[in-house]
Length: 268
Image 1 (cartoon, rainbow, N blue to C red):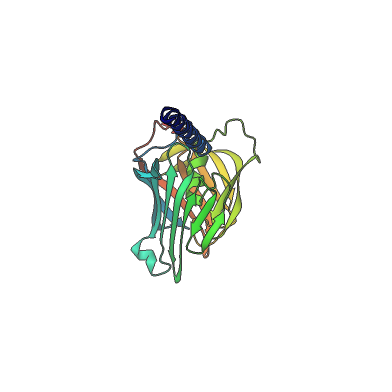
Image 2: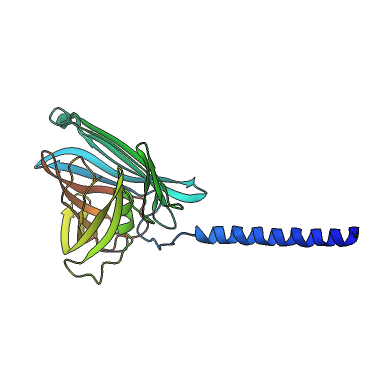
């Protein structure tokens, strides 16, 4: 009887281990994430812009991917975007804006987002952790349901850089979703055609995109933003035109480094 009991016990134990391993495998498969091919950017990329208000250089803007870190056990790009007015313009309208997004390296979706706005007498701070496994956004205001692979405004920009626009027609759009504060907003990006643009960094053949931003844009005021990207695999932003509370500004590329490849759209 002891032998039979021991044999039965071993059988039950082996079956339990098998069932447990099966549950683990199912759990892992349910949390697998997408993989997106990315030839547009990499760690070390740094893009610098003059921010012009009319004929005046009012500030400096910078996109930067300083490093790759681990978050939730995955490789994640730390991406920063900052805008600072120059000292001469601070007297008129001082800006110190900073954004951070933590972008999954394989899936190109965000895990965390921060926004710190300082424009004139106005200030705004916001941060969100995106639980992409369970479909929740966690902020200081509470927990909110989010669709899978939801974006913030910065992560959406880097994701769009990986898209192929070669077969798109003027007026075609790409639909994304952007979470901000306590809600997910539609973020439609319209293709507006092609144009050659000259800035301090050179002359580039570009595609033109116009994202329709409902909330959580880059700068205090929401509204139209037009972006000129190099017409090649890198899709580097060459020029950005956007409205702010006191008019509109143009950001034009002045320098770049740490690119993922050659800028084939640059004219010699």
